[in-house]
Length: 212
Image (cartoon, rainbow, N blue to C red):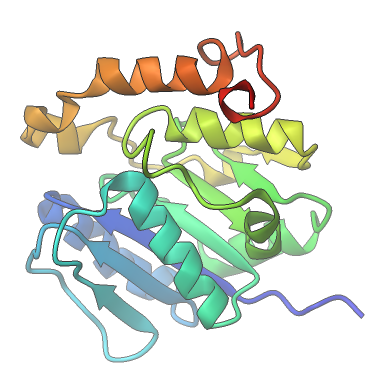
């Protein structure tokens, strides 16, 4: 018997409570029976609801990879099967029925992505446990999605791109717009990716990290 789908929503955030709060009010209606788990790296004033909602505020910024890992760890602890990961500067505009329908009729896929730069994606928790955590040491904020995509390719994870996950409100890099200093180490992360995989995304030459 197939395991019943248990979906949670994960949203990392640091400085865009102004955008996230508007989206959360809508998500509370769109996902009334789906737990929403927030990683608030900026100790912001966020709207809440009484049930199926949790916020974790770490002592220091976990960055993107660390936040995603923390959300996936939480998913394991609550025995979720899938995580819908959302950026804090988008509004998805779909309902839990639509997302569950997508998963139920495509159980063969371990990963679903939008066409909007990893702003909205679904990761199967079992597949995450197979692939491993996001690289928060070498690629905490940039190229972490490329790194994970390449690792999924190496493990032959079945992936699906779908317009169902395209947010109806999509804003690119609004976090950086508010605090450009978060972009300071971009070139270092770029080099870290090259060191790890022997080339930039789509130009990788290694099949193991650092060719080891």
